[in-house]
Length: 124
Image (cartoon, rainbow, N blue to C red; front, side):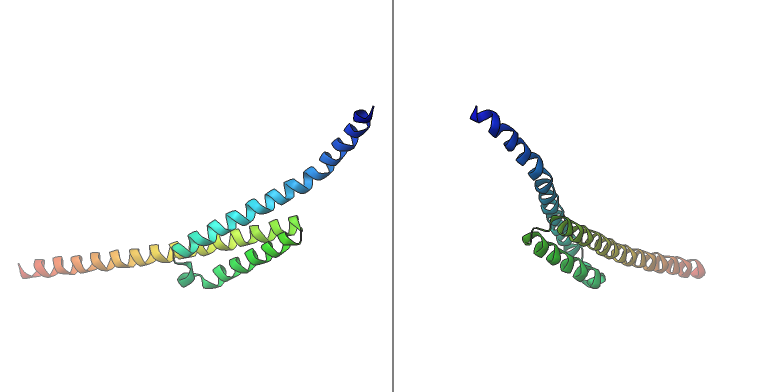
């Protein structure tokens, strides 16, 4: 008899707690992804090419961690996703700057070879 009265209460508790657990898990996942993206951006030189975005990303990550401690799961997830976007943009800007530098170096080498070739042709 006792089991029959406990079962509905236990089921109700699981149903009520499930969304909170899902939000907490989503927040933790978003924070971990943001950390990985920030580290990747740092490795790719974002501190040189996109320092403001990298700082913004770190600030949002810090905000997400504080909100997670306060059990504000949704706010923590939103801040973590903002940190992710800032880190992704910082990483992209860093990679674009590296690609532009490589292009300019290659263009300089081609121009040098072209001028050398023209010089040799004019000597003949």
